[in-house]
Image (spheres, one colour):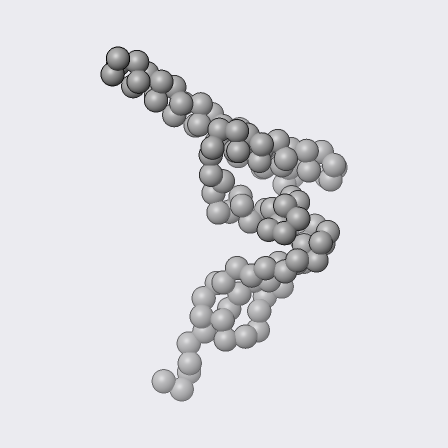
Length: 114
């Protein structure tokens, strides 16, 4: 009984590893793709694979999807990327489809008077 559970768990881990590899391949291809429709399909397929196999996308890949409309966005092509000029250094990303803006904090600026 215990031996079959180990076998199932090992198989599930192998399937998840294959899913992670496939997700990486699809999203890398989608980033390079000139055809926006094909890139969107590849990104959607990668997201479906992640959900089906319960694989969490790494942070760098999660940032490629808009948090509001869930669309695949390529920085500079499907979104506007700006650096912040406030005390907190951040990159602002604005989705070109829905207009939603979100920030990635880089580092807090230090006070020069101290």
